[in-house]
Image (tube, rainbow, N blue to C red; front, side, top):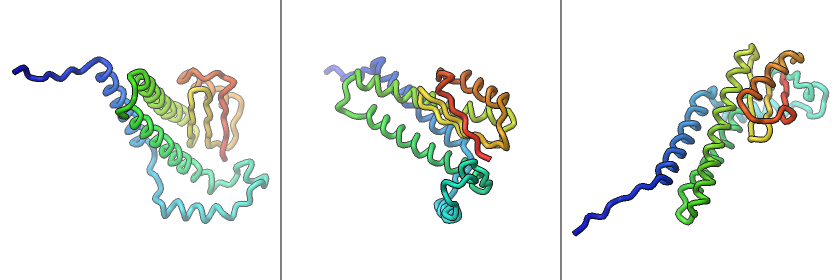
Length: 183
């Protein structure tokens, strides 16, 4: 009798490599993000923030310093949750049994794109902090780039330096880059 042989094709190897790359990117993003608040701390902060009256000049200008520090930790937490959901969805789509080869390749390419965006966001955040800013959070979606930076006043030279960092890391057009400051 002839022993059955297992044939591993190029597509299966590529899919496995892409999945591993995505998993590594998610782990790196998780490992390099600052410590995440517990649920009890998040609820306590939410209770403190309920006293803020929305629409006032003070809030619009983001001069509420107790809130600004918490903004970055909450933004990172929200971004991490969104990325985890996207990764789970892509992994489900890649591992689905009723997916054609073309769909599987498209899903794998989407997974690679998500991992590249995660890596670029981390790099941008690190480079902006290296410019002397206290904190920042980057949001990339492939077509747009948004960066929230903690500063006491952003001048044109600093904004140009941040824009150059984003342009160096991504292929986003300059007109689709938005920089927001939180004091």
